Amino acid sequence: METREAGAAGTRPSRPIDVAVKRFRRLHEVRLDTFRAVRADRLSGGQSQRVAIARALVRRPRLLIADEPAASLDPAAGEEVMEIFASVARESSATVLFTSHDMEHARRYADRIIALKGGRIAFDLPRADIRRHHLDGVFS
Image (cartoon, rainbow, N blue to C red):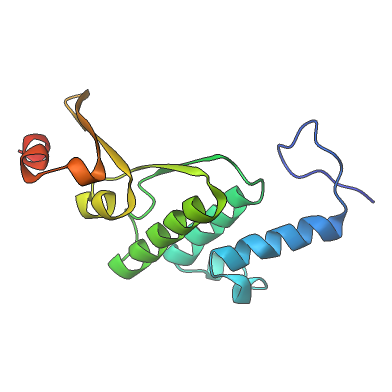
């Protein structure tokens, strides 16, 4: 029996064992390989977020878009999720685009920050170029 990964229209069929191996590798990347037999409704918020990242990684995308990936998590789980995104970007050369109201996350994990205020771009700068006055202008 052959199967295709979801959403992979036009791709070569994969053997079920190949798909399973890919999925296990993605769980390992997000530090959940020991949870592979745990029901999803038994996972914490941070673990559920990591499962979502693993699902996205199965297809090896060049672009990952995450809307407030750490917003509903406790600080430690939020840091872990952001570390995973940073690791994925480094190791796979994928671009990670994330939204955040947490400027510390943005400054720690983004290469470039685009800040919006009133529906307009307040600044678009490399992380290293951002100064206090830029942030004050957005959050005042």
